[in-house]
Image (tube, rainbow, N blue to C red; front, side):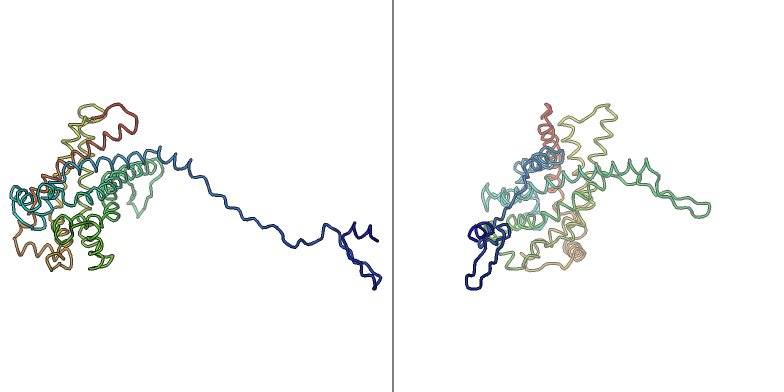
Length: 353
């Protein structure tokens, strides 16, 4: 019996003269071990592959080009913003001297910190999106052309639905402007407040807290509608002009790419044309974005435009246009020059500036 107890691990109830036995394989452990394991996926290969992609290099090139351009042209941006919203002198030289007298040389870079924070993601998203969408649209058109297009037969009339009439450059330019605006518009609002009213908003942290306190989260998107409406013609025209002139010029000169001076000139011209076409909408959106500072804010873009015409006439829609071109033209040309240079550097090409 003892041997059986040892063999089966059972119990013996002596008075009852019986044996209850369980095999050791079926014995229940009182404290079974519990172990919970987490295995974190290794994202390093994916991150490394992403950093080596063409898209990442284009986004990074846009960010670096935008930061370098804004650092050089910040004073022109300050003067342009003041003239567009109607603060201070009505001419470029007077506004320039007024800023220096009131705030010193540092005043010309007022709001430039937030401007740099704004331009890095804005230019990265804008230029990167433009390149990506243009390639995607071009590939889609080629595939659509190679396959049978959608056709509609109505009697003796046959309609072919083709994508050839759509410009990949125009679509990419519009997409780039809209996406960058949606992401970075709050930074634009902060930059304008810091530039126009330095006494009310002396620092970035105060500007953020005061804007949120006065109007909530929606206040950071003041003027978004006219910005998007104005961005569509500007961005579409801007990228279309640059890419079309660049392609035509290269074909006429039988060369593969532009040199830096040609990029500077063509980029400046594209910025000039796009800014001239969309400038009234730029005036309206600036009026909406900073209208709260003057105690009155038009309810919508049409009201802002009519208010400007009523106060200053039709030419009021182009007040600050000269200062805008003075800023937009070099900024556009320099941005393209730096952007193409950084792409060459990151792609391992030897041609720099």
